[in-house]
Image (tube, rainbow, N blue to C red):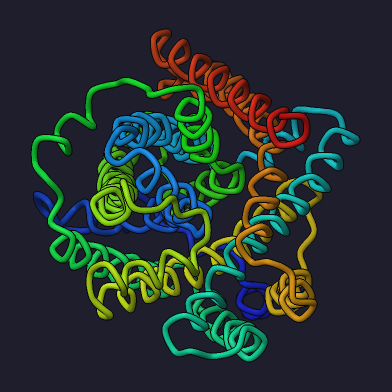
Length: 426
């Protein structure tokens, strides 16, 4: 009982179930239901305010030209998240725990430090995005909007301390709000069919479009989502043997495909709506300008829908960052702090930035630059561990999967190095 109370206080792991307990007497598609949820939490990282800013700029500057980049980046993200989920299912441990157990202690400690920095950068983007949503939708000054965001973030956290399932339901609901908001947006904007279809054909238009494509691809895979997904699947349902673990992974693949396809569609709609609304009129590199642009070019309701989507995405992704931080600290150094204390500490930097009057969109860009440093550190051990049969058993990567994963890792790492160079020296 004491262990359970401590677990709830720290916002820890869900109660473990065997495969038989999870599935019970369910037949057909009902067997899948206990496994739906982890991917939706991970997918929130792919529709955060940073993605908003990149997609809106790409659509406003080049129309539907870079729509194919969004699709390709989503496919890459699906494979990476599948590897992370598979690692947790095969080993019953999350990626940070495996790094701690198999690599030197100093390396694990370094990983924890950089992980906490990544979480701060992530939370900076998400928190500012949510505060900007309150500011735009309700006309609130940024400081009261930031304080309200802090209150909402702590309220969402109360679902986490009750277990992952309540949090998954809340996150899924918020993702659904974003889906509704942008589905209505695309009905308002009515994109032209032929240019839209042409956007799926890979091509560029000058060096700036290449740079922006690199921004979309490079910012797609989020380091905290990689660590977190293995933590969400590792002890949710335990397979007693290799065959059960294969069945669990099969169900989790469906979860990942559903959640990540939804995230990909949302990103594609963002770019499409921006292209049909702003292309040929003005280039949008500020979310506040985008809000007013949708209101002016389409209808006031279009601006409100954009703001509501931004608010929902910011709040949900900010909550996920706290969960990822908890998983990383527990895994890398085997320590935990109460999630409310963690949440309050992570909210202080964005609150200070907002109170100081710093530009919100510039802060979002800076946070994406910081996150670029952590991507290689997350992907490389993931591919190494999932490629070893001694760790993965029957769920070890196929050689083609490993080759594809290393290819994606190389592309993402090179793009982020390129973006860092352009940011500081370009």
